[in-house]
Length: 263
Image 1 (cartoon, rainbow, N blue to C red):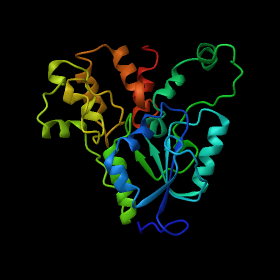
Image 2: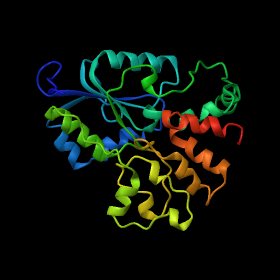
Image 3: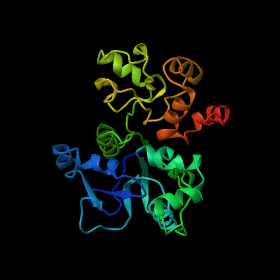
Image 4: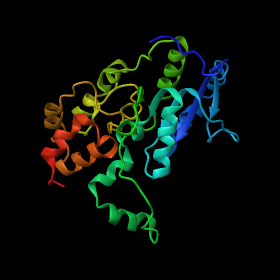
């Protein structure tokens, strides 16, 4: 990959866009704190409604998209962003895998509208899918929220004209490096063995089992993982755990087909 040349001269133009989400992934940009000040010396964040009063349209060199298109206007925005940017990054598990909003796939959409919108059931909504269903995605920054370290690595890498070096191995590797106790050995349903590293194992480090929000690692051994996990939890609880963040991850679809009807 060659270096990114600015879309209109000067610094690289960056856009940060929000679709349906809790906006936590965008907040990670602000959580960069002092590092953000260093970052804006090298790039021009021209579109970021969470932090800017006035926002500019494309073209963009880099666009980060948080959330999923749940309404027709959001889908139109996503498609326009894709047309006007060189590198598009899915920011977080919602945009990468459908995230928590994808739970609608396990319920009747009409019933959900009645429960959520109460009196506005005729609201025009879309079935939730990752943004890659609609547009080409160049990079995935996984997690709920996305890792601020991966955000910084992505931006600095693109400035330097290289691909970001994002971890592809399981969470357990980082747990071992930090000498954390293994929660699986304590009978807790931790998805660390099949979940991609990169968050700093913040949950297992404080004794909370990994919920798999960063999605599957490369070639996850689901058969062995499920055999171990079901020693400490029931199948219905385990299914709900897998469905929580990454239910639309392709690696999990065959597993869900086998489990269909158990909950």
